[in-house]
Image 1 (cartoon, one colour):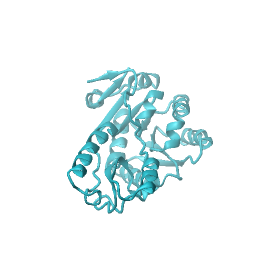
Image 2 (cartoon, one colour; image 1 turned 90 degrees about the horizontal axis):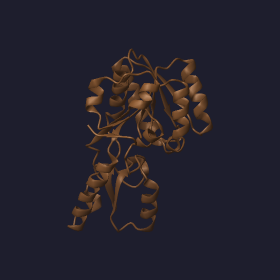
Image 3 (cartoon, one colour; image 1 turned 30 degrees about the vertical axis):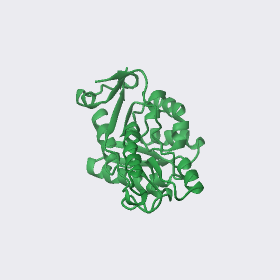
Image 4 (cartoon, one colour; image 1 turned 120 degrees about the vertical axis):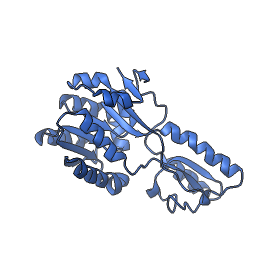
Length: 244
């Protein structure tokens, strides 16, 4: 089981579709392969039928949020109430992940406290609300603003003594407790197969966008100790990386 003092992930777990859109505005004939493609980006007609000159891999996995909540329930003894923090300006979270979290919470018998942070200034008030409602843990949904505020979020979580499951690996270098999500490094490697197919004559419009197949679990034992948590051996055994 690999161990490290940092998250060790050279790639961002947030889809960089801004660059892809800029490329698409430049050309609608040259093939464009995107390793972290959002279905709602406007770059493709659908995952199954991209329909243009853009294709690649998505970062979306249907059961990812449920798995994140399952892991939180394993990590935090007698967990009953979980806060979910999301950015309402993020269309992906709004249309997909919040609904997934609600469904998963019902399945797992957890009470869900859904909180919003549209701006950086909203994050602290959200943590105040979590403490007031006695949330036992936090699921932080993916958002670019949350990455930029990762040090602040880690500090607020430590002060609130709140275990956090992160959907973006960047938070681990700031002291996050746990990360579970798709391996962006694997997505980038798989993107090479699209390039190979296109060079051999395939059209991007005919190459379905694939979902991630490899997922990573990272646990920060130093943060767990500070929170007074003992990570179950069953969770550590499944971790791809343990930060000490």
